[in-house]
Image (cartoon, one colour):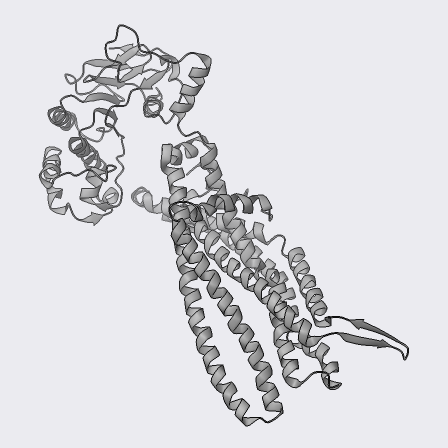
Length: 583
């Protein structure tokens, strides 16, 4: 995680911007165009058909209401009996359609999110961007929270909103027609000589009412997206604080740092509470509108239809039909009012998703490729000397390391060893102090042993072959590697899953790193102070095991002090402010 992600205080003042919606549509719309397209379209079209059937069932219920109340008013018992039977059929149909909508909708949500998460992980993990974005300070805040949680809030509400919008448009068209044809026009008399006829007056009332409520919602709720975005960032920061504590639990416990961590987490959660309270205040303002307009919706059509009912122009069944149609039209028109909170939630998450996607897309695919492009443009690309029959594996300043050589490079902690390793691995470009340009030539397999060996979650077998998940290592080979590195006691736990990074000591983790080398047998190996937790005798034994298992391997051994003499063909000293010297 980058330093920038350490605090959510400087959150952007998110406003609804069409640019974000367009960018998210371009990125996430790939779900309907790549190899998932057939399933995506099947789910989408199936959902659309079910929504049309749902609207048809709602219209049928509206017509049933008119039929039922007219039959009730006329005391037509046979018609009422038939109405009860038709009602049962409509209810069963609506329930069946509802089940289909739920299954299709939730499947679409899960599959769409799955596609987006996969594409985000591809971008973030490819070309080592997860490391380079963090090291450069250009990483958006809490990328893990964005990939894990914001992808959910950017997809699930959007599907629900899309369903609501489709239903709103279809229902508005269907029920406006009912208001227009059944409600007819209204003649407003002004004295005895003048009158004004308002065509489709209930449609006009519904439009004015809905548009006014929507405008007020937009005006009052403009700040809600920013509040939601700040809440998401604060939640991510608080979660990262607890992850950091868990990862450093032993160090904190040895320092008796529980109270200090409690204060740190309390400050972080105070920020979460402040952000939530800001959302609560926004919801309170919006509730003034929703609670004021909501109860009026079923009453308004009755008030405007009452004069025509009293005059005998409308039957009781027509009045109830108009009231139900008015409610449906009003729901459709006020869709934005009812769903503005969800739109704000979606927008905040969609923007956070696109920030990490755009950060990955803008970051160069490879620093080595970027440097090579610059060198080609300047005409200064490095070329191996003509007298070298085979190019070197590594070139560090004036020194070359050829295949099969073992070279030790030592220097103080400030000499630039870590920077050198990052350059040789392609994570950085540039120079290492006065030593000059570095370059590497990849073989069929390269491996780096860092001082703190990374152990992913999973079984010990998976940990041993990491990151080559497809490596088919036999049990005898795994057992032999553990035996040769002094970890024979773990052989019985090959299939056991555990938090190995917490169970094993630093020395055991370094031994396990060497076991990986014996199993993988890479062409080249960089040992970055990765045996520092072991005594010299153990170091010698592990280096001898590597030489026996992979006799042709090329090794660059970096450490703070000279060690294990007799194993290396060259010994180089890296010192700040001085050229790289042979020892």
